[in-house]
Length: 313
Image: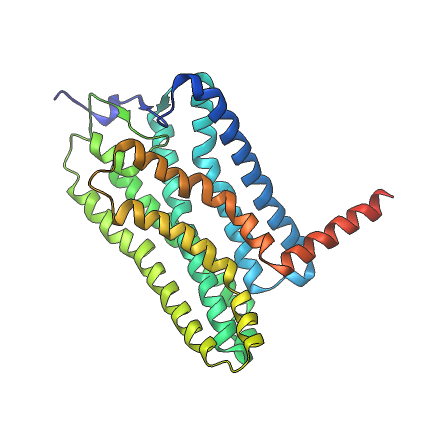
């Protein structure tokens, strides 16, 4: 195959979702509605936590950062996909593709670390309630969030720098709706062994270890809940972490099913559609999960609406 230097690569082609041309308008409207709902829903969570003093706790501190991450995560891929669907132009500049890949990896890692921090927060709250205010102080919460941002940035930067040293073949078509790292490596004519080693190493650090930490936290939580003598106490303990468990199950369940246990019969189209689950659907569902299954959030929303009603009179 003819080889080209990375410096001569001006653009890639995003083949997008497996949608028939006559269905483009319907799916454009659908994804636009999903994106706007995702942005507004997560921004509402941030606003409620910011304005309501009752939500100024470690749990909601982490949730506000998770909501911001979800808005950013969706904004990395969905707007470009919508533009391509509307204009029918599949091209994306080389620099734009690399930038999109960096921020996609960055916010994916940030999601993982924030979910882990939230699991640890629930572990301390349920297993060590008397020491909760001491352990989960503002200093530790800030450190956990700052560490999450730094580690996520470092992992994304590692993959990005390793990718920029590669050369690409004549075919620049990416069988996806965004610049996925794995898809880009398959287009390369260079030796990608170092990149694959980085994927394995960083994957263990940013995906496997956080997931193991979450499972350990909830294993300890489960053991503590079983020791609670009253049914009311068990229900109260479960209610404090049910929303987080739902989000973790949805997020990691999709990633594990897609990347760790791929079916031998899974086609490119099925993989692309599965990617929509954790890049588009999960950020959309998070606001609903945390608002509909959380009394504090519903109470904060009611107080905000009541305040707005009084101001309008």
